[in-house]
Length: 306
Image 1: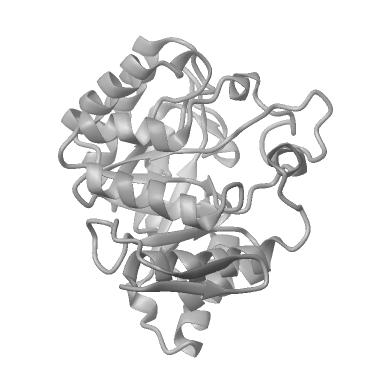
Image 2: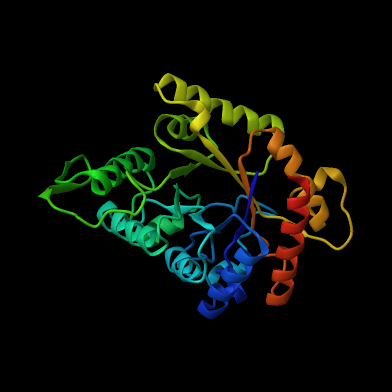
């Protein structure tokens, strides 16, 4: 199993110098991948509850460094680790601009980008970015169509329900051919069906193993139905734990626990089919030194379980 870590990028860690320094140190520690998330606002009266903890949006999210900028800093500070978005909200910018930004980042990193896309959960962010909340699924489908075309076609042309691109040349192509891997997030049957039908993998979250396996099976069946190889799909799981000094009851892991307990949960995720796991502990501490200490202990314990 591959082990990743969330690039420091929000709250007290939203500092470009620290992001680059931390990325270099995380690679030196032995991490396989670094991941950046995507938030734009923290509304005072949210339209939807935060899907975690007590339902309140973490205050640290109010200071959120742009994910592609964070990964650019990580790219220039590293040479080996994969760089991924988990998740980049795919619908907040036109696909032509999104394709250019992602291709540029893949070139900067010399082909180390994993494009993780999602639809988000907060309607207020759609309002703030001028994108309709309704119709997200069809909008994502057409976005994926355009990304594929922009990254691979010699002559680009598209005419769809939402966007029209006249016949043209877009010669800026990603380093990875025919394109960077595309991973899709989501926890519904429709989302997992889409993963199997047209993505390279799934961006999931830590949850009870039976439910995790049920969702993953949906993606595998969808891939087989679409004539694709289910074995080629990747499952990447995000863990957002609250790190504690003392052990917590087993039922609270991986939502909370010591570093040793969180690392121990990797066995269950591997059994459920996960190919890669990464942790984000930016809401468990506000101290840079403690963040890096947790990262160093976690990767050491994770390596021991491989």
